[in-house]
Image 1 (tube, protein in one colour):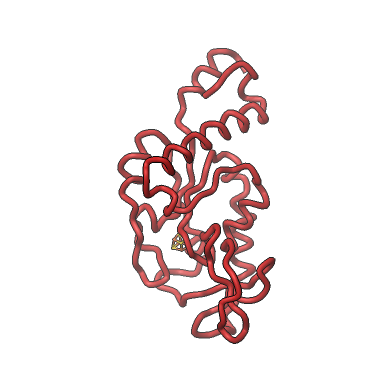
Image 2 (image 1 turned 135 degrees about the vertical axis):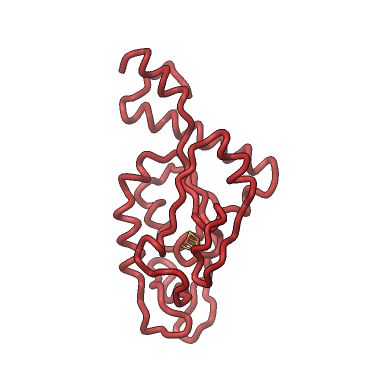
Length: 192
Ligand code: SF4
């Protein structure tokens, strides 16, 4: 790539995917949202934000029956809370696969904690009797992590203080450098 094009690339903001409910959009199963003003008001000045909602994009609608993770910790299924016959596992896994190309262009993801789709660390997993057996990632975030192991991936709880916000942004810019070099868009002696 020419130095001029590299200059242009270095001036572009990093691209971060954000759960739509954290942007204040009313897309949760109950028709509500969980806005985090810092993301929309401050982070958006420094980064391009791309809002996404795996459940809405899977066609599940708003409002929709709540689901939870059931089964093994390694490969749980997303089943209806009130109607366990409702199984949206394949739909949610397919969205993760369908978004692979879009996520390949991202420099980070901020996802909603505790969600059966978006949660990263703390989504409860239940057994068939409804007892919680552990906590882990939601189905969408699992797919993102598997496809892009180095991608900075956090939930909103890590953005509650200055240290968490700065730490995430450092990861984002570092990943962006590695990604652009790996894709042949940035020479080794340049940084973004
Ligand atoms: S947590 Fe994820 S799937 Fe649930 S409403 Fe928010 S963006 Fe959509």
